[in-house]
Length: 452
Ligand SMILES: Cc1cc2nc3c(=O)[nH]c(=O)nc-3n(C[C@H](O)[C@H](O)[C@H](O)COP(=O)(O)OP(=O)(O)OC[C@H]3O[C@@H](n4cnc5c(N)ncnc54)[C@H](O)[C@@H]3O)c2cc1C
Ligand code: SF4
Image (tube, rainbow, N blue to C red; front, side, top):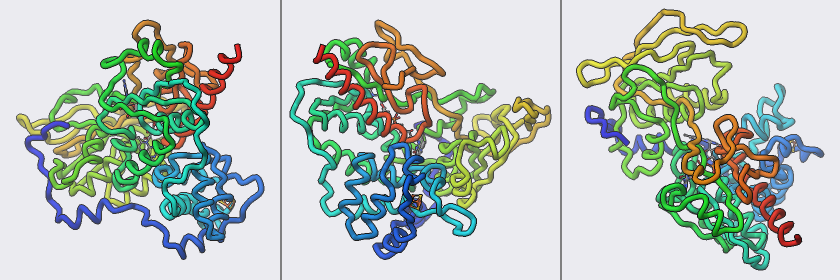
């Protein structure tokens, strides 16, 4: 992260940091879980199952909680989603299972709290090492996995239960991908991430090599020669540019880089944070950095978006989280330039925008300035293909790796899933499902080759 010579942190009392970064959703007590589980109607053809990207048998695990069979509930969750502990905390349930819940209508005001019940089952299972499946006898097949985020970890576990060996190569010094370096600290603790990784590696047959970057330390073609298959789960690595004057200023920071630092920091008071922070962007990353800037002691935080609230990719729930933390959401404006007085940033000049009936955006020629001493860019991330383009080139579409419905890429024996592919939403639970489905496809393809 940049040095931010003129910006300091540490404006809060130690207890304020602890309170601000405490779990945003306090866990349910046993009694609360019991009462909440009784609200489930155990629907036939439950729409919540269809809305879950990993297809968890939601009424099935809720019935387990309701009858006091917490281990059975956890087993049901883990059978479909081996990262059920982290997904319970970070899934945007308000646009997935809880949105689909039949209790989510006006008279009842709210759906069954599926996410919190899932967290309850995962936290209260008695044997935290029990696996939902056992490992098949070794096949002798070795599959290389690039990246240890939700997609890579899920693929590794699902390959391991089929009896294959999964060898994960991770560029970072710790595994977990964005679960370790991206998700907001108030949603997911590092302890939960570490426990989950240790748990799923407990199945056996999974090797993890951190600080090993494909394209730098080993090439994709070497992996293709040495392994029976390769699964690319490298996520997105680059942050989009704003292309405005003053963008190289020291007081402009990529939100994702800053969040990575924040996630791993043991001394939050030492993190530099401006008094007047401007966040440019409208997705969940923008909400996360805006909210966490407030939690770190920023006095004024504005999130600025070039279109209206209905076009923001952050969910309504996330927008409310930001507002509840005192973030001001400003719409219909785009950054024009960063303003400085000598070396110090003084603000950002914005141009008001207009969106016509066809959705085309244009500047109005009217400008205003927001005072700021720190700016975060949260304008989306992109896939960098270069590490994976030695020798033959991977076919891309929409700037990401193109895969077929079996997660096969254009290169033989090379599969891909998670954020780096050209399908589905960029969500942890979707990446988990991609890893699961790709592992099943790899297993079937390897068996088909054996049979030839
Ligand atoms: C700030 C932020 C907040 C988010 N919040 C949420 C949320 O609250 N809920 C939610 O569901 N989703 C959230 N997401 C999205 C979610 O984190 C991703 O969809 C998910 O992590 C994708 O998983 P993945 O395994 O595809 O990639 P990643 O988690 O990005 O993991 C990819 C891994 O590959 C490694 N890698 C990359 N290149 C190489 C290489 N050349 N060699 C070796 N290793 C490599 C990376 O170091 C990384 O560890 C958030 C994303 C961001 C950026
Ligand atoms: S839709 Fe709601 S009420 Fe019906 S099974 Fe799912 S959680 Fe229970």
